[in-house]
Amino acid sequence: MSRFKCVFCVALLLGGFLSSGCESIVYAKDSQQTKSSNEEGIEQSKKLVSNLCHDALEIISTKNITVEEAEKRFKPLLENNFDLSSICKYIFGVQFKNLTEEQKKKCLKGFSRVLIKAYVKTFLAYKASKIDINVVRVKLGARKDRYIVMSVIKIPGKEDIRLNWSVYYIDKRYLVFDVIVDGVSLSKIQKTLMAERLKANGSKNKQNALDRVVDEIDSGNFKLSENNES
Image (cartoon, rainbow, N blue to C red):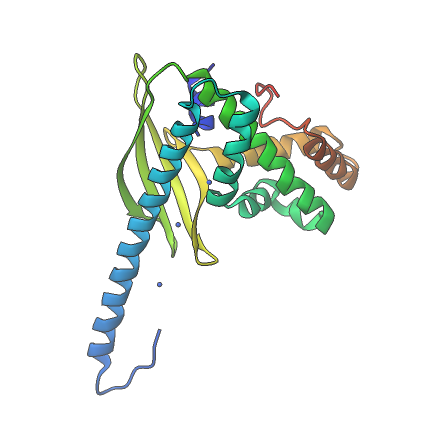
């Protein structure tokens, strides 16, 4: 199993009325509120990633756990901590608007199944090893309500891996949108793979190509990459 594929599966960031007489006071208040909001976001993002890693490692450490049971326990872990809707929309790009509501539902369910299988397969491959995922620090993202949680994966006998989590605050929840492995965005890679898959399925009729990809996702035949076995 390659280093990149392993890490991938171990593996998704601030107004008021001003009056001339108290303008400086209001600015100071807004600055304090922004600082407080940032501090809370940093703490909540760190907590999200720490809990996610802890729960994932706890699942694979269960004695004699089967693949089926591991996948069952990973399902809520993924669905409750990753912004699957935004990830799916981003990966499809401009073609997302051409999906029917029914197709969008199929894609969300299908991507969830694909990711669960990928995570479980790789985690169980390292079941006998002692994997440590340590959160190093958290910083503000480039845009409002986005945070980067920086962590390090330690696997005995292997080089440490830098794993950064892009966390968004959306719909009053903190969710993982992207995972950056040694500086490489997994969401961007999947977006590129999706574009290639759509092109391969039909360059002349884009809608037919889109329909075929949706069918692959819905049937469970869609793969994250050419090297990702089902």
